[in-house]
Image 1 (cartoon, rainbow, N blue to C red):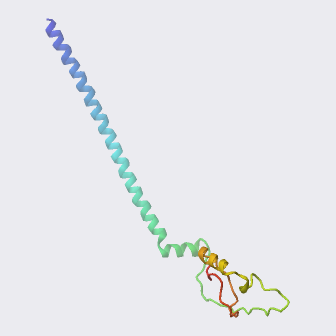
Image 2 (image 1 turned 90 degrees about the vertical axis):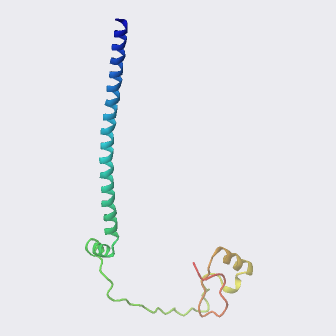
Image 3 (image 1 turned 180 degrees about the horizontal axis):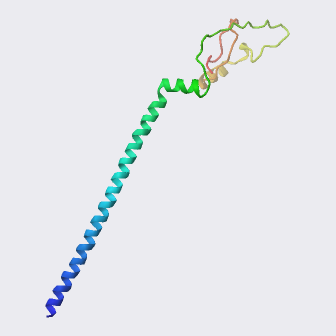
Length: 133
């Protein structure tokens, strides 16, 4: 009789363990299904956003938005104006440093650091430094 009770308790314990394991497998299956649905939703949203980015980057869309939303218009005619420099009188000092006053070392330093100095195109002295800026 004691053996029958022990066997019955062992079978009952194994049955409970089987039910717990089956319940956990079902619960994990539901979680997996939920995560797969969420993944599919995010992939679809990602595709939609990529399409929207591509649509906003198209030149036709940019032009339409500039015209309709910002009130911009295409350039119809371009005008270039020639501006004459007013004559500089002898009594006025020249703006900026004179070309001859920059030392050779200063020109080398400016060349190394990429510092340019503007000069008058009518001035026949060589430019100091680089013309970039």
